[in-house]
Amino acid sequence: MWKVNTRIMNMPKKERETASVGAVTTDIVRKEGILSLWSALGPSLVLCANPAIQFWVFEAWKKAILLKAKVTKGERLLRGREVFLLGGLGKLVATTILFPYLLIKSRLQSQSRPALTPDSAPPPREHYKNATDALVRILRSEGIGALYQGFLMKVLQSVAFAAVLFAAKDRVHKSLGVLITGKK
Image (cartoon, rainbow, N blue to C red; front, top):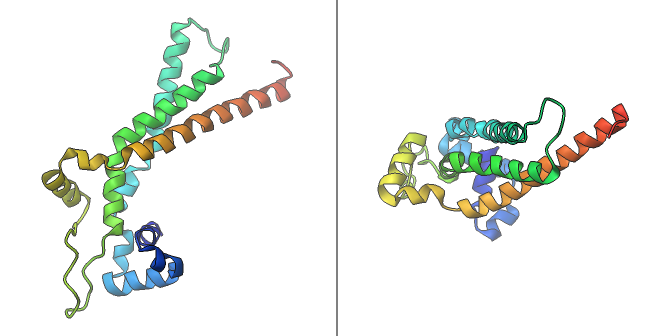
């Protein structure tokens, strides 16, 4: 579905307004083969590490803050602003590490594979065989900076969302703790 969604999002506005998921899926399968629906599977699987990295960074910094404050187990929880900042920091680190995979995944999913019929039009200018091929070709032709095209917008959106999410989760967790135990 991600490939279909990416393909629709990369269509001109007029085409996008009338495109259906079914029609785009059928077109991809007819022209590129059923296996093309799973292009970019490798980078997609690597991107599953994003929340693991985010939570690891959060927990590592949380532990460091509490150790520095010489807090014994259960004595003090992080303050709301600390949770907010650490949630954002975790997302920043995860996004910085994994953004090249996101870019490669997007490029693999948005490209059209050469059609299966011999009388088809020539393949698009940039056609990547797989994630490794995409990485090597991007680095050679565009440089390392190309792996971070669009990074600023993505990181601003992701970090802000993660910071608010962690702060809200912390607030709910503390409120439920008070309701359940009756202790503040």
